Length: 221
Image (tube, rainbow, N blue to C red; front, side, top):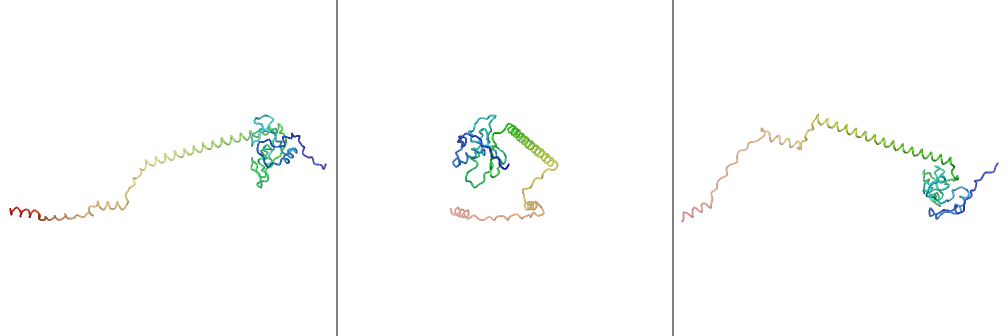
């Protein structure tokens, strides 16, 4: 009773214990990767298929289809082994975040091929998520329409109020002159303040010297 059941080792073709070339993995420890795959701790590195099928799972990172995928421990999202190796940078001091929920210390587990029940539950959950997004979007559109309607009604009400105020009390024409200028105009127009000045004296007529010289010349001749 004290013995623990070990993880069952899966039979995997040797060629699926190393990356298939989806990425250029330069710092991958191939011996460690092979051990994790044979111990069923990571999904085999199957080549991805571009066409979907009922018995294949899609990796949300590379959008390729595989017979089985790893699952994120934090949010249970699927990911292929090569995409996981791309996320987990070796010898990095920064903790790796989940590409889906951004949880630190990203880790995955492998549970083998999904059963029909699991796939059915996932499809139901995906459908619920899609319907929830549609409802949220419809509510946002409805709220936007109500806000636009309220703005239109408010602007119409303000316009009517402005027209009514303009008919009851006409706006006064502002004067372009200052109070000081108005006082000067009033003072100039006041007859009591107007002073009558005497006419200027006549200009004296001076004798024309040229005319006298001409008369003397005529008399001599």
